[in-house]
Image (cartoon, rainbow, N blue to C red):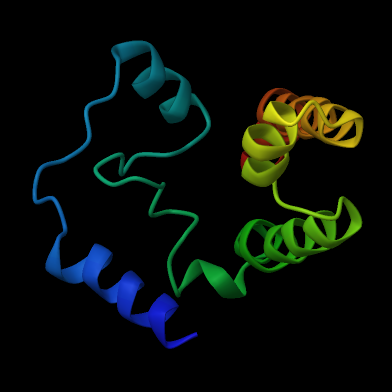
Length: 119
C-alpha cells in the first residue's frame, strides 16, 4: 500500500506534465454541451474535486462509481485490463465474456448515463 501512495505522489506531483492536454474541437464542444468548462486536466474539475464530492453528481461519480468498479472487479474475478490483456491472450472464454461486458457497460455509461447525470 505504501507503493500506491508513493507512486501516486510521484506521478501527480513530481512528474506532473505542466502542459494542458490537447482535445479536439468536437470533444470540447461535446463537453461544453454537458456543462463542463474547465478542460485543462485529465478529468473535468467540475466533477472530480473535494467540493463536488459532497454533491449528488460528485457522490455518483466518485463514491458510487468507485464502489461499482470494486464490486465489478470482485464479481468478474479480475479487473478490466487483466481480463482484456492476459485473459484474452490466454484464450480464456470467461475473459472474452467479461471484456465484452466491460465494453458494453462503457458504451452505456458514455452515451446514455453520463449525459443524463451531467444535465
